[in-house]
Length: 370
Image (tube, rainbow, N blue to C red; front, side, top):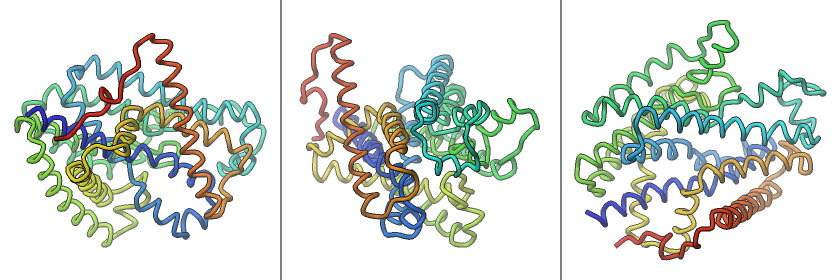
């Protein structure tokens, strides 16, 4: 059972780590690539096809949560609030600081339909932009409550997921006309671009992860059985969701951040199949330097996410915004990926010296799969 548990951890971490590794590349293209580069070139098509990583992070989050010992309602609320604060701090660092330092180009400001000078109301708008960290924070609060009642009845999360998926279409974009309350409602089910990751329907991915976490525990941590179910469920949802999107793309997919029912089902299928593929890769190639890098990315997911956004946004003042061709975008994608990991390693060294803890050996860091 011990080896199976290790395989489970590696398979989840590998999938999440691969996603983290490619985040700087996807966001570099998003900020610097021209409209043609992003939407019509082969590079844009490849990144858009393979860059659907948010679901992987959320499913892994739900899965890991069910195995944690610190998932009480109170702890979940505390962690959720802390994660939201990190998200708002990231927005301050990536938007407000470069604005104050004059590092944001006019083209970026004009993309919002604004003009200089940037007023306080617009700065508040940027700080409150809903990213995946705010999504994860709010979801953690809900997860603590749901876990309290569903850990002994795993199908409850399936019912909740189906309910959320359907009801989101009826409440999406609903507001009350009161600014503070409207922002909370936007976080929950907003349809505009002040919130990129609304809790509903993205919470469905976390609930799917929680279901498989409960299934894993109920089956004596049998990784093979759990991931076979992922493969089956992934294939079914991939086909059903894909068919729905083909039947009515505008309703079911819309755009990646505001997907409809079919889009969510399709992306769940893609992500579950990727988890199964991660286990296959580990069984085929064992642990090596490449997989160790992805495990490292998985452990540093939050800090890497913040670092890459700060580097990319601060560099707009020198590189420009939304105007690069394929070749330049590729070069920048590589440079920002390297820069992100260099900054992360510097932070690791500083934190290690501050904590006065002995340096871990590679043997301690790497978990072998037999």
